[in-house]
Length: 76
Image (cartoon, rainbow, N blue to C red):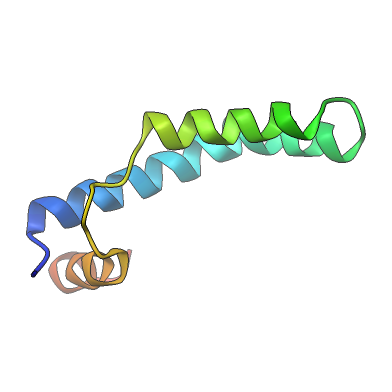
C-alpha cells in the first residue's frame, strides 16, 4: 500500500520529536547509566516513555515514508 503524504509527515514528525526528546531527556540518563549512577531499567524506561509519547503511525513503511518526504520537501 502506498504511503500517503499525511502518513509520511506523521512519521517524520514523530522521528524528529523523538530525536529532540532523546537528546534532552534520555541521552543524559544514558550517561548516568554508563557512570553507574542509575540502573539500565531507569534509562530504558525514559526511552520507552519517549517512544510511547511519539508513536510511529501503524502500518507505515518507514523507508517508503522517508522517501516520500524526500520527494516532497528535499532531503530532511
